[in-house]
Length: 102
Length: 85
Length: 117
Ligand code: SF4
Ligand code: FES
Image (tube, rainbow over all chains, first blue to last red):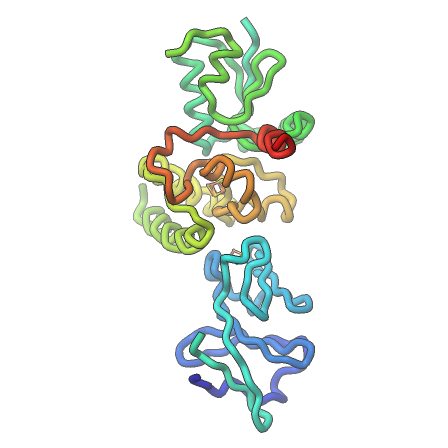
């Protein structure tokens, strides 16, 4: 596993989202129901930034054409074969890390 | 001869083929490009499509009392009793 | 065709290929049709902000129209799978070599065939 530091845990509140650049990848880090979720910030449809979308529970809606993705698996709800890349996360000593190996 | 009326889009290649089909067979037809029509016409086209249990998929071709959605020369021909070819 | 239009068509090709591939579709082997449709989508994007379907009608309601942004396959999956092509014919199932052999089946016909079984 290749863990990279993302942010300090206190930087992101419950229900919050934050675009980040980790190892040259545009990521979106989300804190929901106590967990941290990391997905690519580029929508698999036409590359729109999901960070500008709206989050409801574990579902994020792309701002461009309203495609819905599960932030836990990255799956597009209308066709689960289409995914936004999702990455593992862990928290250690108040710091959030993202596993850049998918 | 049954009356031929179709709803089309100016951007849709199958609509162009449908028009070409009737033109080549010398069958008079009327058409409305949905994307170029005014609000009221658009609304009535939509209602017409929905009332036939269809979506607004073009071309929407009315031949007499019958409706053919899509480019389908076989169906056009048989509804007009044309011989194939 | 302007350089801008051609560039955008190439971008659509790349982005949409990525979307349709996992769904079991490819660009139609009818390259003339593909070029025509992609050009229409570029023009629609310029005019209306999004690469909408060139063969289906917009209503102006966001919920309806967003499902007609290309590729709209995810929102019409079963219907298009039954035809082995999307409504416009821009995309076909991967095993289709002769797109002219495929016919458009209307939504109503498709639903009727489904309830029969
Ligand atoms: S019918 Fe085909 S070309 Fe039209 S939006 Fe859907 S996928 Fe794109
Ligand atoms: S770019 Fe995200 S839904 Fe189209």
